[in-house]
Image 1 (tube, rainbow, N blue to C red):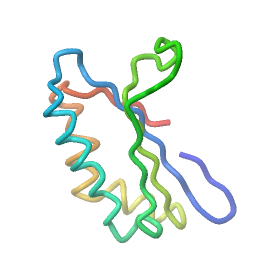
Image 2: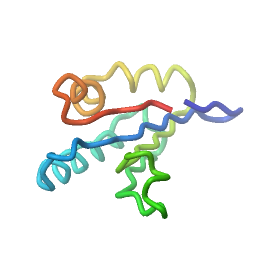
Image 3: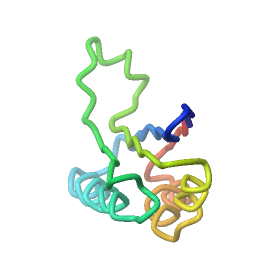
Length: 104
C-alpha cells in the first residue's frame, strides 16, 4: 500500500499454480476487474495487468498478474478491503490454494 498527499494505492501480485487452467485464470481476472465498480475505488481506477512480459521471465519471480487500486484516502482503502467483493476475489482464493497472493 502506498500513500501520498492525495490518494492511497494498493498493489497485489498474483501467482497461479502451474496446474490452474486458462479458463479459471480468465474467469478470475474477469471477476477481479469488477472490483473497480466499488464506490470506494477512486473514479473506478483499478487496473488488472498481465500476464507478465518481463524478460527474462525469472525476474517476475513467478507472478503472473497484478492488481493496482486507487482510493481517495486510508478510510476508503479500509472500506475496500472490508468489502465482501474484496474477500471473494482477493482473500478467499488463498484458502483454496489456487492462487498465491502477495500484498505489496
